[in-house]
Image (cartoon, rainbow, N blue to C red; front, side, top):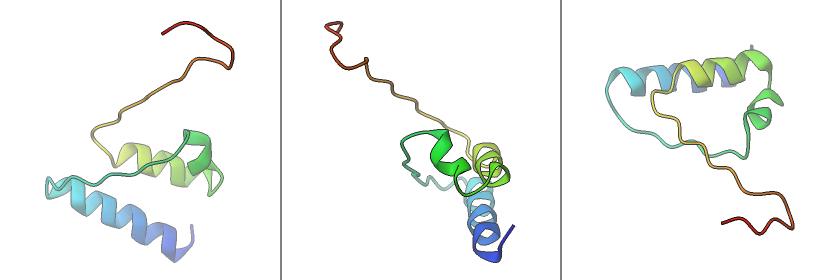
Length: 63
């Protein structure tokens, strides 16, 4: 993994250990996997709280 990716993961790890909240926003886990599968997994493992939101498919009338 390149040094920039490692520094992001290291920062997330330190923030988590210090109980400091940090918000990462992305459309899907696949966005993180575009960097690499290892990066996506490291981000997932180094974050405590995960909020997931889904939308209904286009044309859906459900609320």
